[in-house]
Amino acid sequence: MQTNDRSIVTFTGVSHALVHTYELSIPIFVVVWLETLPVTTALLGTITAVGYGLFGAGALPGGILADRYGANSLVTAGLVGMGVSFLLLSVAPGVLTIAVALGLWGLSASVYHPAGLALISTGVEERGTGFAYHGMAGNAGIAAGPLLTALLLLVFDWRIVAGLLVLPAVVAVAYARTAEFDEMAAVSADGGESSDTRGTSSEQRSDGGTDSEPTSSLRSFLADSRALFTVGFTLAMLVVMMNGLFYRGTLTFLPEVLGEFLPPVGELVGVFEPDSALAAEFDLAYYFYVGLLSVGIAGQYVGGKLTDRISIPVGLTAVFAGLAAIAVVFVPAAEAGLGPLLAVSAALGFVLFTLQPVYQASIAKYSPPGDRGLSYGYTYLTNFGVGAAGAAIAGYLLSTVGADGTFLGLAVFPALGLVFAATLWWLDE
Image (cartoon, rainbow, N blue to C red; front, side, top):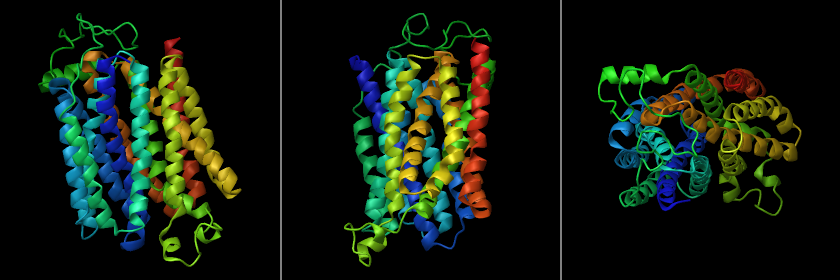
């Protein structure tokens, strides 16, 4: 990769990793809160859905600001806000303060994806590779968040752990202030994109303006939005919605679900004394969950590379088909023993995260570069905003029909995603 490409990928990778470090530490805290606070899975699912919902709701204004002001300062402000939110979580006396802290985290984190992905799509010449490395960094954070949280919880109270998690934000902000790069290096002087990218040419918009105009007023925002929502982009957004609902519904309570199928830690001969204090604090489900998320690093890499080599709608169709099948067989496989549970969990982690760079590339394919921040704003409003309902849906299903019914219910989302992706494939023929 060129120097500018490397600088952008490093900047976005560090920021992306931290966003997901915080995001995926929350399900570990959820397990602790269920044990220590007077809450049900339905109530806690709703609380976390609010925080995750704001994670999506702030994406659209974040995308507008990214088109106008650029990525660096916007992402840095988001990093600061995330650190402050976990500082508030560390002093939370109860559920209400937890809800406020998660809401602040969601708003702060919401600006990252539209800004970061717009930056890659307009600044990185090797876009597919940039998405791949960006996704891998995100999955490193996805794995590090729950692992670090689980390890710290072996020693400290959850409030102290939340306070210690502020420190990575301080380091990331310090790095972000030194990062320098050309945000539009992959966009040619006439407004088009470089020849090795897959995005739509950015010439004259249907409203008579050009993509270089900032989205600075309600009128221009509405005009840009109307021009953006072509049939292809709308179908891509429906694909993103199905991903978000399945992603959030699956991952929010997955540590709790895994705990139902894993053996007691005392059965791990030679690892712990069954009655030791460490065994009492050690939850194998946490580490199984981390392993599943770590497999996603390989999925991100494969998905990113595939976008440079195959048709994006074909890739979307294949990945959704795999996710639907995995959701249907997950609980039967888990009930069959530790080996099948390990295999189906690895498959879920790999395929779930293979999807992310593919749908990110689909947004770049069906949107003009000058409105890329706006397009990714809509993307993550849908993915994390609408997708946050998946946490509430999963919490309700777990409390009423158990793990088997929950996974069968969640399988509807990738099945619908397959239909939308296949339609996109058909329209591209």
